[in-house]
Length: 361
Image 1 (cartoon, helix red, strand yellow):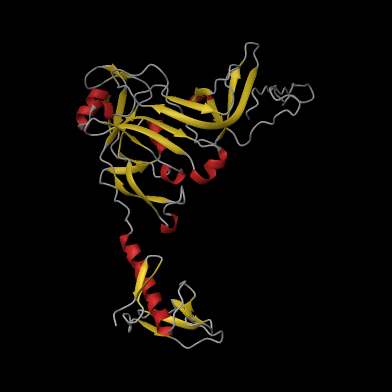
Image 2: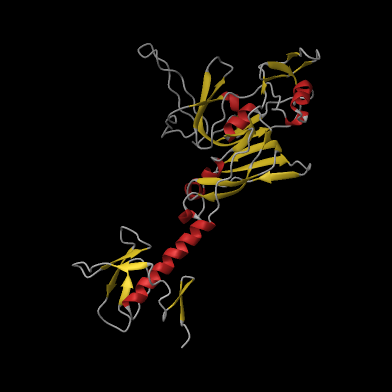
């Protein structure tokens, strides 16, 4: 008679052959009627076999869904499952090594420093295989890094609240590949965003302000690379880089970029000498990384969209440098959704006049 094959959840086993005999050992039955099963010399039981006591297939185990007409067949099924798990682990990808001369950096660091020469994650996997196929299920690791690319702009966006809990935030990273083609990197979910990118360890840093280059005399943005400070063309030539790959030469770089969901406030001076204080959350930020040290862009590189009106006309975009992180939102008035005023008094000189605009907080 040939071997009869049965299939459960994609696994098969020969029900009329003892293919794994010698790999498993049944221990003494416990008081509760369960028999411990040891596999490949394990010290602790891998599973327990027990009988329902009725029917033509009474034998099963705690960790398999099958029922068998013989006790040894239940043991064989467990060995099949153990082998299937081991094979799955062997097929799991392994973390990609960080190439020599590179280090990992967060997207906040990359944006704040204007770093443009990076290697982005091309393929990732969940640390826990149980999260495979689930959105933003858990921590990830990189299984393959891209070749070096040049960033054009980076945008960090937030989802609506009921989707954010399951899917997390997402990013849109536009870049130029080594072949000169425009491409986009889409980190989906908070755990993918947390992977950041790789940056060269010798990435030069843009100095505080433009000045004369000690090497060529040019009046331009200066970069510090090791002990040497020089203009963009001189620094790029020494490193063997294209000038567009140097950190972005924006002169009004923000001191901080806050992730979506961060509580922030913005103080806006009024014509009467007072101050309007807007409070809310960051919804997204966008950093432009175009321009060179010889042709810098003429506007601030970072733009932030917030949950409150920056002006009376419904605008919600502002400069990153205008925001300050806070611990809690300002209270809303229950009587007037558009304005709350706290007047300073002689008895409470510590109180300030606050004016909260908009009903979106």
